[in-house]
Picture 1 (spheres, protein in one colour):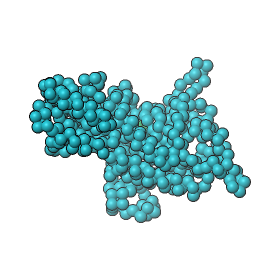
Picture 2 (spheres, helix red, strand yellow):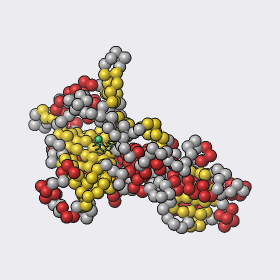
Picture 3 (cartoon, protein in one colour):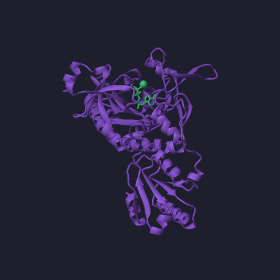
Picture 4 (spheres, helix red, strand yellow):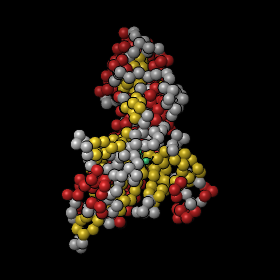
Length: 416
Ligand code: ATP
Ligand code: MG
């Protein structure tokens, strides 16, 4: 990607109405556009980050055996009435709309009901279980307050996976496995060391549900964290009984702000029962399928990672989710410099290294500032000096010093 062809531009100042760090940086870098309060457009570079995050999640869901599908945004009130979740007094985040004939529709805030109805025709026997179905889809929620840039919005992306099991034992095994899978996801996204398994209320179906909370000042939640053990409890369950059950001591708990990046729930037969989602067990009995749900917020994650890793110069992306691995800054318009930079751009691109090529006639300072603001992991400089030395200059986004490397060594460093 050549900067001269990229339609977005960076800016020095964020709009005055954006107070959160993530929105300020993402807007200044040209990654997102604010449509209105709590509604953001992802521009090309921001979309790359979002899709890279989704790709990491997708790989982990697939390797766990998840089968991807896509449910609809438009929702049929009938199925939500069955579970008593259509009434605005019961679920207060609905966006609702109407057909021309006057009948109501909703915009999906979550998808248990439509998923259960859609897959019911396929499930009849114990042989059909267990399985996992998931999607990565836009959710709509009329949140009272849109806050913290892309961290709490009214239209956002969610990965929601649902497990379907025969027995509590089978469900528990899947549920436990997902704790490990989620830890792996957050580690791969570069926030593993600040993301903690957090015990939360399990509602009517189990003692606990679990949140994955990333320690972050801009988060809306308060958790009580035992850093040594690497686990936390949230405010709902922060009481003596729970601490005793979990083997936690109050004096070891630190009260910290955090953002929920994911959560997992046991649903038992809450949704299977109203829809008659049953199976015939080996002993011939009809039994309810037991469900669990497992959410992650990819668009919130863009904000959380920006908050957590960003510094005074701008965004900082881990290499696997960055919009490009390399920011190639060409300094000067001399023939040899242009030729050297063009060739390097072509070579790296051919090798599958993603490059943002700053081919503009701009000052070095402006180019370096943009490379830093965009948070690209490596900055490579091509100038008259590098041409004369036969090397290229490379610097990592968070490192202090640059290095001179031959093309061969540069490629070795960038191609993993
Ligand atoms: P919260 O307590 O933050 O409102 P939730 O309990 O409503 O979250 P779920 O309904 O389980 O969350 O959604 C799963 C994931 O989707 C959350 O862990 C979060 O990462 C993300 N998410 C939820 N609401 C929003 C929102 N308004 N904007 C962006 N992401 C969201
Ligand atoms: Mg919520």
